[in-house]
Image 1 (tube, rainbow, N blue to C red):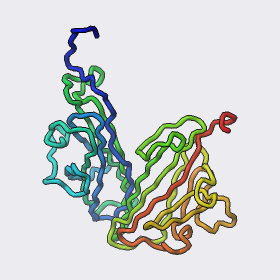
Image 2 (cartoon, one colour):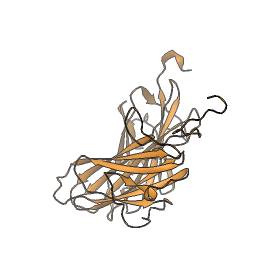
Image 3 (spheres, rainbow, N blue to C red):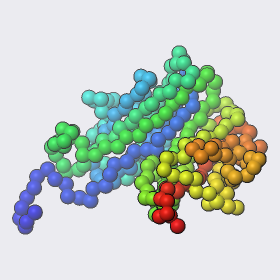
Image 4 (cartoon, rainbow, N blue to C red):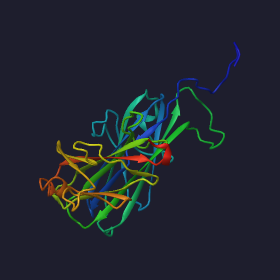
Length: 291
C-alpha cells in the first residue's frame, strides 16, 4: 500500500490462530451422563461460533463457560443454522473461553460402541467483512478437536483421558498438537481422572509411540524413562528392567503402564475423583544427523 491508499474489508492487526482443545478420551457406562469441557484460546479479537458432529448420533447440550470454572454461565446455547454462538455472537477480546458439552449415553448402546465427537470452532475476526473467496465462509479461522467416547457395561465408573504434547528442545509449553524437526525431543503428558461414582480397578495406560520417533530414555529421576504422578505422588519406571518390576514396558510401538505395578501397589484402584498424569519423551529420528 502507498500513503493515502485505503483498503476495505481488511484487518491489519497481529493475527494469531484460534485454538480449541484438548482432545479427550472417555470410558462411559450405558445410561451414564457425561460432561466434557473444552478451552478455546483466542489470539485475535473476534466473534466465535461452534458446531458439532457425531458418529453415533448422541445428543449434546452446549453451555457457555466464559471464565472456565467448569460451571455453566446460564441456560444452554440454542443453535442457529447449526452454529452455537458464544457471547450471543458479539466480539470477544483475546484470552481463554470454555464451552461445556453434556450428554447421556443411551442405555441401549451396545458395549464397545465408540463415539467420535468433533467440536469445530470458528472465528470471525474483528473489523473484517465479506467471505473467504476459497471457502465462501464468513469465518476467517477455524480449529477442530475430536473426543473419543467408548461405551462400557452398565456400571458407575468412568475414566477421562487427555493427551498433551510439548517440544522440549524448543522449551515450549504443553498444547494439543506440536511440530518438530529431526532430532528434536517431544514430551507427552497423558492426564487421567476417575470422573465416575465407583472405584476403577486394574487400570493401565497404553499409548502409541508416534511413527518416526523413538522412546527417549533416561530422562527422568534416576535415569528412568517415564514419570507417573497420582494424587501428587511421583513414581518412575524403566522399560529395560528384566524381569519387569515397575510396570513400564514397550514393544517398540506402544508404551504400556500398569498403574498398580508402577505405584508398587499403592494404587491398585482409583477412587472417584482420583487423578494423575503420565510423562514420557520421544525423539524424532534423524539418523547420522542426531548427535
